[in-house]
Image (cartoon, rainbow, N blue to C red; front, side, top):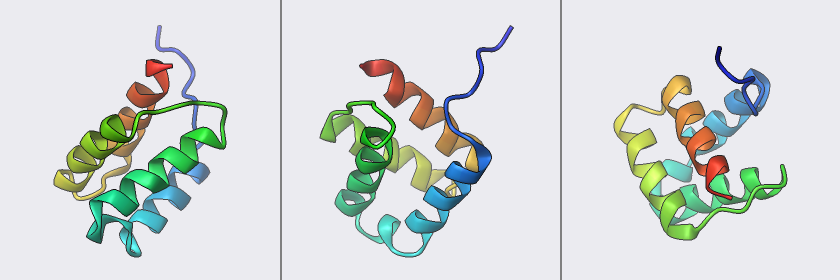
Length: 78
């Protein structure tokens, strides 16, 4: 059975919109957005892991399932 997702669809959609509105144009800025998002929810994340995740999200066209998957993986790190 799948564990409950850590992030609501509302949170993910808001983060996705922030990324699309400018964050993905600069991968460092996008990685910072992911870090701030996760830190605000009690997770730590390395800058390099966040940059790697941003690359995968960007390649997916910022799809919500990929964004959620990457955030779940980043959140597991700590």
